[in-house]
Length: 199
Ligand code: HEM
Image (cartoon, rainbow, N blue to C red):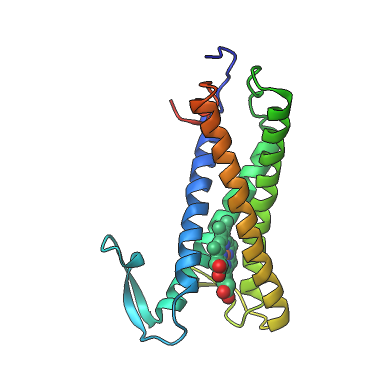
């Protein structure tokens, strides 16, 4: 075990896990909603993901596709705001140094993946927001009008494609990031993962 492993602060740990859960949740809604039919009866109550765990009630009837798209956009812009706050906070709060046991190549890979993740965490919701703005529906935030739709199919299709491609890239980088964390936990048996957990 390394004894030089300063931990991340509580704020850093909460930002990290809250945003990680948010991103996985957004993938779940994104994939789920993409398969919903365009024509379907409108309803006023939705059993979330048909799991029988929570029923969301609305003041007016909408189609399942419209409900899940609006949910994706509402949670997405909230998460986008949280990501921006996290990045601004990060500029003024330096993380602890990487463990001294890291090899040079590991330092480069870790720093590269972290920077890339910050970039992708901006690019993914940004392209999603643009997709929504250039559709005819625009963006509502949990039922409240937020940004009106511009309805330009060509621009919308461009951002939709970008949103999907960036989604795949971030999944690959997140996968490598998790593999790195697991390697430190089970092969190197060092404190890397522990530093990113609340005590
Ligand atoms: C980090 C946050 C986000 C993640 C992980 C995410 C993920 C996804 C995924 C997996 C899809 C399905 C793509 C497919 O069809 O394969 C999707 C579609 C979509 N997302 Fe996001 N998204 C995020 C943020 C946002 C935001 C902030 C908005 C808008 C405010 C947004 C708007 C959309 C729209 C409109 C589509 C559907 C495009 C279409 O099929 O017409 N997304 N997203």
